[in-house]
Image (spheres, helix red, strand yellow):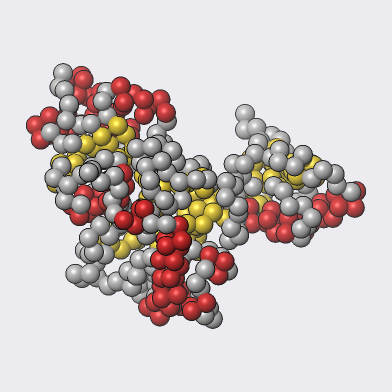
Length: 417
C-alpha cells in the first residue's frame, strides 16, 4: 500500500498532537532563557514550568521581525545573531544566511534542519528522484532549505539556482528531473524558453513553489502542460510553516511549529476563521524563536485535510499585518487602534480605522460594529482616538458582522493622483 503521508505525526489525533507540542514548551522556554541572551531578557521573570498551554503561551510577549533586527543591530559587535542563536561558528553551524535588513540566520547541521521535507512529500516528491532546485543558493536560505530537505528524504538535487535559462532547459532535458523547486514565475520562464528552443521536458511533472503568489490562472497554465504545482509557506527565520497537499484545500501546518493567529498589532489570539497575524513558536533548540510575529496575515480553516492529515490548516498568505500608516505627519499603528477598542469592551465586534482624502489633506474615521451607539459613547470613542493617536477621527457605526474579515485594522483609502 502506498503511503500517503510523510510520517505518523501527520495522522496523530489532535489531542496527541497538542500533548506532544505543548509538552515541549516548558523545556523550550527554560532552554531559551538559559542559553540565549535575547530570551533571557524577553522572558525575564517567566516561570518556564507554567508555560504548558496555549493560554499560557499567549501571555508571553510577541517578538516581531523589526525587534529581532533591532536586537541584532544593537548587539552585532558581540553576537551577529542578537542573542537568539544557541549555535556558534563551526561544525554545528555549516551555513549563515541573510534576509533583507539584514537579518542573519544560522543553519544547524541536523538533517532537514528547516523541516521542508514534509512539504516536498506533500507535493509528490519521493526518495530516489532527481529534483531541479531553482531557489537561490546565496545570501538567502531558500536554496539550502530545499536542498537539505531533498537529500534528507533520499533525493538527488541539481542545484540550478536562478538565471541562465537556456542552461536550465538543457540540464532538465538531459538529466530528466522528476520535478522543479523554485518560484512559479521562474518555472514559467524556463518552460517558455524550452518551447522557444523546441525542447520538450516531459520528465517534469510536479513542482513545489514558494516566495511568490501562485494565481489560479498560472496553476492552470502549468496543469495544461502536465505539471502539478503545489505551494509551501516558509520563512528564513522559522523554516517551514505550512504546505499544500494533493487536496489543494488550504495549507496544512507543519508538525514542528505552534501556530497562533493574533489581532494585528497585539499578541491577542483571535477565534478560528478570523484573519490575523501569524505568530509562530518553533521547537528548534538551535534557534528557539518563541512567539515570533511573522508580519503575515492568514486564518485557520475549519476541519481537516481530505488527505487524512489531521493538523490544522491555514489559508496561506493573505497580506501583511504591519499596516502602520502616516497621517498628517504622525505614524498610526494597528496596536493603537486595538488600545482604543480595549477601553470599550461593550464593542466586541471588528473595528477598522479608515484614512481618506487627498495627499496632505488626510482624514480618519474609526468604523466600529454595533447595533447602535449613544452620543456619550461616540464622544468617548473620539476622545480615546485623539488621546492615543494625537489625531482626530470621525466615528462611524457599521452593522454587526459587516466589516470585512481580511485582517485589516488600518485601511489607507487615500487618493494619490
